[in-house]
Length: 205
View 1: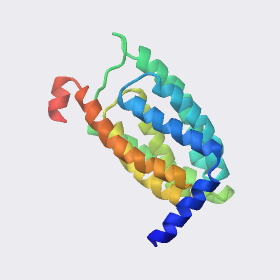
View 2: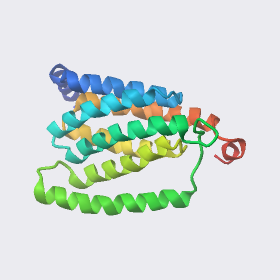
View 3: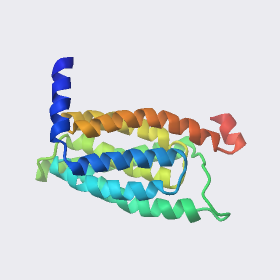
């Protein structure tokens, strides 16, 4: 089985489009810069997201294609928020109470039920409910990043684990490996952003 997977990865690497390769590379650049809270992360995010709109549409992951169009718009919003989102200047890392996250999760589930219904009815979408859950969860988590909410990393840990499985099922192996790397970088991001929390929030983390 391991040998077969290795062969599939080699073939997939040879067949990977330059569009997916550049998009994946810029996605890594985005996350590395986001961990350091560097404003330029949003520029890398914008370009990567625009490229992934096409890559994912071609793979029949329609909700994730739309999601990346949203990412591109959020990159503009995030750039502005990180620069001007606080009355005192640059936005600081903060935490949200668990009640907000529970409300966000309930909203994600409700929206996923609705969008997966329409995907099943009108498109040949692959994994419509899972695709929808990943999409709406990512919408919420991206907003958390733009607002520099620390718990965004916990959301991304779950989202990227599920996404890794989705991309494997659609033979997007380079992007699957990218999300495997994301899981490592998420752990680093948690540690780095935690250090930026105000002292009381840090002590309670």
